[in-house]
Structures are given as structure tokens and as C-alpha cells.
Image (cartoon, rainbow, N blue to C red):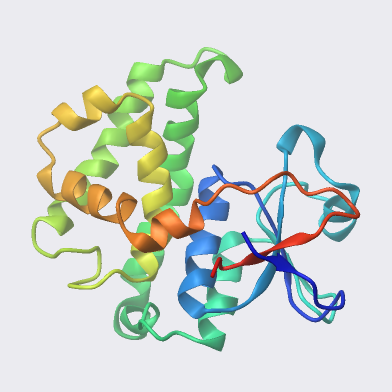
Length: 224
């Protein structure tokens, strides 16, 4: 693991948490863009005061730019990085199919995430029936599977913005009961997810970092 030794403020600072799906998709876009950052891994039960000062909402990811501008939402971080440099053409499908892609991501971030949370963490929600929410979530999987039986990725033959935005949440849903997920008759989404999880890009952004505290060297991201 390399460290950032440049003077403070010369590169953006990314507050992240390895297993957060929102942070995962931000890291994937940053890695695809090649944008250098100083990564500060966060322990959610002990968030650094520097992060809270920058973004009082207290959730990751948070990007603090060298000019002190703060980007607080994962999709906005993705767009920021890829607008600067998009060598793999992740944004290309958005030029011709923006409404469809936006709707798909909105369904993932809204109804599906609602079901995912209540399936994975039922004790956090009063009167939550995890099997009901698993069934509801599976309906979204079926919708994605129908697309993925036609094309290798959600928007065609290449991994792009929609895949990065949605895959971390499908991973979390699948991992809650892998035997159940693997037994589903959804070959398109199962193939798609496995190919992503085994990719060098995903494995690279899932590298482990120690929790950052003031005074520590910061990890250089993306890793060399």
C-alpha cells in the first residue's frame, strides 16, 4: 500500500468505508478515471471529526476537493471523476439512453435499497418481514436478469456507469444468503455479478486499509 506524501490540499480527499456499496461505486468510478486521491478509511462507529466537519450528514462516501468544495453523494462523485476522465467510456450510454439508466439506478437506490435493508437488517425496522422484502428485492433481480440475458452488461457489451452504480447493492443482497441466491433461476444476473466480483477492477477497489486518524499517512487511491 502506497501513501500520499504530497502537501495537504494537492489531491482530493476521499472518505470511504470498504464495505459500503455507495463507497464501492464511487471508488470504482474514481479508479476507472485514474483520478489520484488521498483515501481515508472510516470506521462508522467512530467517524473522524474532520469528515463530520466537511459533511455533517456523517455518511460515506465524501469527497473533499483541493479547493475545499465537498461532494457528498456517491453518484455525484462518480460523475465528477468520469467527467474529468472517462477512458473506458462509462458515460457513453448516458448520452443516448439517459432516462432509462437514471430510472434503473433510481429503482436500485430507492425501492430495492429499501427492501435490501429490511432483508439484511430486519431487527432495525419495526414489524419487518425479511422474507417479504427478499421476495420484493428478487423482483428487481428478475428485471435486471431480463436485460442481462440479452447483453453481457446492463447497457450493452461493456461494463459502464450503470453496472458500477448497481452491482455493489446486488452483491450485498446476494451475500446475505448465497445459497439461496445461487439457487435462483437467474443465470444472467448470476453470471454478471460473478464476472464483476472476480474482475481486477473490483478486487483493486476492495483492498483493505487501516482506519484513518489525524496524523496518519493517507493511502494513495487508486492503488498502484
